[in-house]
Length: 302
Image: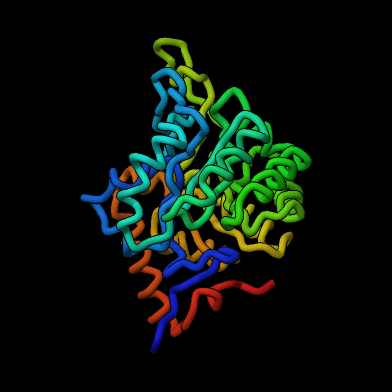
């Protein structure tokens, strides 16, 4: 039986539905000796800002049961160095390159989107309005439907590239945010980003993270992410990318059955860098065994 693992995220075509999530694969080249990036659908590079960012002070990582807290604070080299130093290698890889962008103001988002628009080798933009571990911007846009729509409109006007808006789970109703960015011109949404959490060292009597709070990722958040993807898929007409605790191909299939057109692998890459490749292989084998011809046929209709 002929299998078709290809999928579409709006106008963006992917060879298969498995992407590397922003923040966990660096700029892509960090993983080149550990997996063949051409075997997956695409890479979402770590968040890029207009100017370089130092991030939060250490400690910035803390392990939790079935998860990981991080408060990296979006450390990155800035858009100019990214284009000059990081992107050239990514252009040599046969996979989609999606750039995650961030800002403190609406104009920041618009300017960085405009700067990336004519750069060869970039296939889409993921708009980060949902990072919970920075003190300005980030989650402030992702928790207010009007602010989320304003950022989306500005990015949409600034670039012809496909626009994917990354949503925060730290809200009362994620479907309302999803509908607002859809109406503002988003081509797709990705969800979820990390869940705000904390951990205390009982011996020092201090929070384990210098930032106090951080974003919880890993298998612990998968049921929450899956529920939110299910809800958003049924609330909007644009494609949905599922993210959150995906570790195995079985996890990925659950998200695809919930209606996601693609998935992003994050924390699992830190544990086992080749996780995404194994997930692609597992999805393919499952489809062969179940005689499912294409990714769309995995979706549960309800």
